Length: 558
Image 1: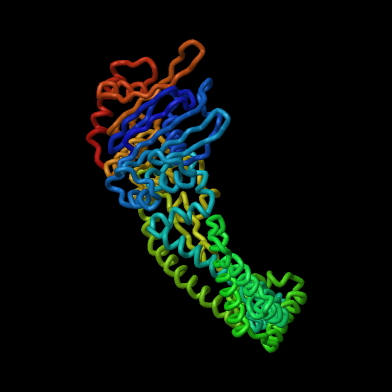
Image 2: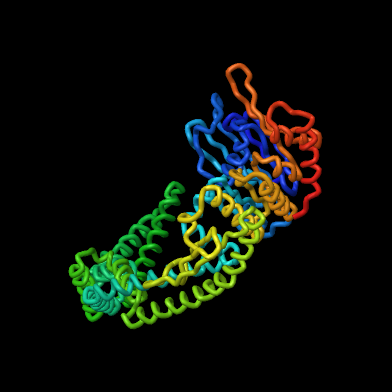
């Protein structure tokens, strides 16, 4: 339920803050006073298209904030939680429009795209415009209204999804059939290439490791020969490094006197002899364990040759072979899984068509079951709106040819203004006044089955007067007693029956025009009803009539 609306610098409204109650709220005022500001501002908060021209002259931006009580609306609570926008069970929608046309949306203080504002707003509020009867000329509107009344919106959405899935498969099947030879040729080439690369089985960095091993193996003899010679030079010959070191030590050790300055040198020569001996031992151990393996060298060279050859074949570097292998394998898997054989794709398309037929059949049954009830309800409302002879028929005509995304039938509203006359499309038989009342009847009936807690009616009573206007008021009051209704009206018979009355006026200060909205008490409400009845000059007779109408309206129960 809408609990508060704050509007700043929007149109001619500098600042408006309104609190709303449950029940029916009427907005009245002179033509041009700004009654539409409230509804336009609500639409803006719900994600409607923004217009930079709506920013009050001289202001930087317009700002609209709508606060809702959703404590009894689990769908909205769940949506906020799923989108991580819940804030202590609050629901505050805000929209700003700058003077250059830029717009921003917020939910509970968090910036959000307009799509989210629209999605959440659709759960909270539904606006029925005075121009909405124009949409009754379109059959897609008829289908949507019937599905809403039948509670079949989810079925309709599932039908559209099933149709899209079937259509996608059918298009793929058709494309496969048209390009079967090309597709099969590509598959065969990919299979051959992937199998060839599978046989190679090259691992990441394998080429680098093989090249390093090849270099070691190809120089094995030289390594052994040089290592043997180095070992001999270290210790095995009379002129070896170790022998020469021993001679140097003996010369210093045999000095006739001890020379302390040579102690460190002696220590260094001893350590050098030890290091040379250990190095020689290490060389011998290396030589004993090191083998030149011509067979392994041959294996490495053959492996490298296979890698180089396959890389040249695919015109890439050897290092790129593993990644190229994965790429071809993924393309092969995708082509295999994108439809497999024609037979498999045909079977999948047939299964999708069967699933569509099943869900579309359920939707069709829901529509047929609801159509007669809808016709009966609308004709009952039309009778109250002084159109008792009008016959209203919801025609369900089977779709010919290919299946439709919207189900198995076209939905169209037909009407007959006179008994005995065949029902024809609304656009061909209904006058402007009749169409307005038919639109109101349809909106009232559909609204009664709506789960949206707040319903807004923008001058849907245009062209209606007299006793019919009183009936319209009763209809709107009845809807308000079930939840919350906001209506802009020029009819005193309607205004007299509301639970809350907001009066819109405008005034001028200097060269600026301002809009003002105030909540009326009982006395002021009677005066406003009198104004709506008799104009500017209020006579006692007009006031008496207004008091009687107000008293009767407040006692009305539909």
